[in-house]
Amino acid sequence: MLFTDQLRDLLGRVRRIAIIGAKDNVGSPADRVGRYLINAGFDVMPVHVVRDTTWGLPTAHNITELPEWGFEPDIVCLFRNSMYCEGHAREVLQLPKMPKVFWMQEGIRSPEAGKLMFEAGVKVVEDLCIKTVHEQLFRDKTETFACQRCGKCCEGRGGIVVGPRDLTRLSVHFGLSGEEVLARYAEMMGGKPTLKVGDDGFCMFFKEGRGCTIHPARPSVCRAWPFFRGNLIDEVSFEMAREDCPGIRREASHAQFAHEGFRYLEDYKLRCHDIRTEGRAVIVEEHELPPL
Image (cartoon, rainbow, N blue to C red; front, side, top):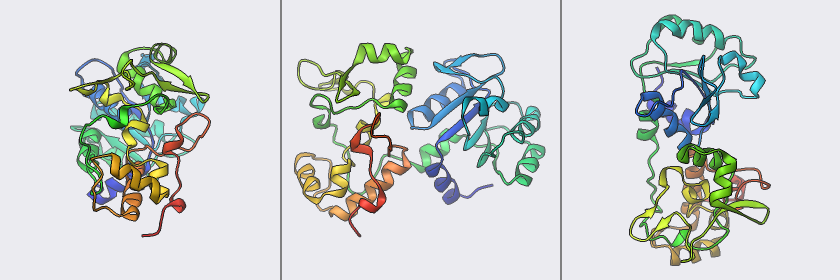
């Protein structure tokens, strides 16, 4: 069994999760966990023996098909009866690259599967809900920022870029294809799709007195504020943001804010790398930060 600090380090570094036994039956454990992981920023690949789509995502019928999809899971998460876990472990052994973790959800244990994975150098988690663990280890709390839900970061046109992972979240949230989401809710700005604004100049999903009406599925740029590239690497930009945003602690130093913000982007899978498709605000490298 992994200790808490090991689990935090692990979940903070991985990005791709294959879910064996994935189902989108509303209210089922697999549905709740799958949607949570997608909203948390993980790249999720559903695996189910008969389903072709789950949460609107293409679904593999067997984990051995993943190389054909170009998907190398960091975690294989199982929603299967314990009696089937050994068989799934043997399927995992057929992958060209081993995952970091073989994760059996709450109520699922298999010493046989655990032994096979351990011998292959794969870490094993049994009888734990990955959603519960992630919620406990990663909370939206930082020392330098506490959101006041004022809505100032929701104002203005063209700032909320919809990246590839954002599009997946929004598709799952609305039950629409990616093309339908873009057609209804986005417009092209600077060569990238961005959320439309309403007549009041705010994001179309921001409502006075209610805040963000798609909060669980909001794009990475929204999740990242105020830890934007400019605020992290430029002290003047940080000081301007601190004056304007009531959630930024007035006593926070730029260096403290920058390093805490970078860790926040890492923990929540918000840091991006592709300037062609993702928001510049969430593309930043650690060497660009001010020294502590």
